[in-house]
Image (cartoon, rainbow, N blue to C red; front, side, top):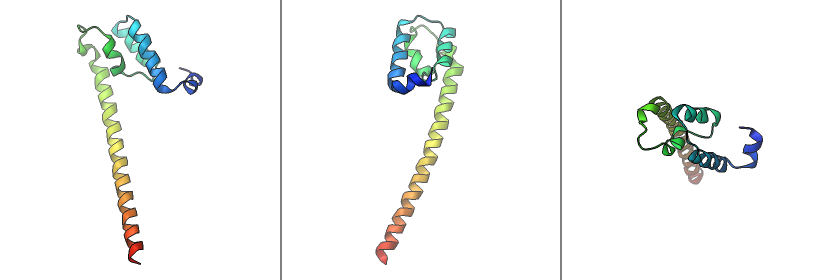
Length: 102
């Protein structure tokens, strides 16, 4: 996807557009994986709803596991950021207490 298109259209709108295109496309597991690799905005959870109910999740096990690992990494990064923000807030509170005591 070209960056020019993304700059003109919000990422949410672009993702929504790709999802609508996929909803009208009949595709196999292999072509779905091509969509995932071609469009960085789409994730496995975006395309799973477009498959019929009889499609086995086992067919997407590797992709689902990779997505869960990515989410886990992101969660750990967010936890680290939260800990850092908490420490900064505590430091600021301590500084304010010290200033009040002067």
